[in-house]
Length: 216
Image (cartoon, rainbow, N blue to C red):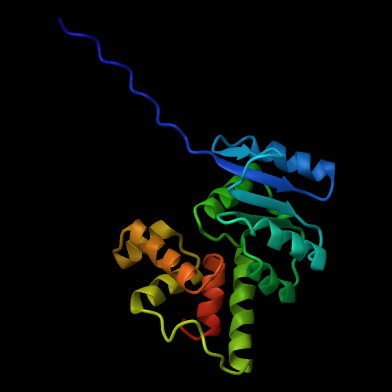
């Protein structure tokens, strides 16, 4: 006797735990409301570890930078920053603090926030296009004007240079894999190897280091 096939189980969705810090209750509740619209994001309570720390900061003073540093102090935690303005000289400070993604307040829709959170959770970086351009320009000026300092290693491998150059141009992991005929896992391994070997925070930090040292 034949039995009817069992219904296929729907795959479980991996949820990213997010801890939200904001300067006032209205801002915090607004961010929480937007994040709860995305099924892959779980808002973390006061207890339990979070994969991503999302911070809303109106101004990037020393107190705000200290909060950013504390947010990434726990191993494995990534930081996402929502801010209204970011002056050019503050950009490298924010990247050095370990921020993986930056979202402008004016662009902070439910989709944009969830995209930044998920990208950060996967170990990637997410900067607005105008900030990425500022970062590249700023690091190049520092490289041209500053004295050469020894880096953490003597050189990048050609594969690492190829991957980081495409990251700097704004391509995501899948696009880089297609362009270089690599698997996505290979691209991720290259970036993971650079961040761990050079003690860097995220993709944006890798790009900044590579530009400063003249590898791209």
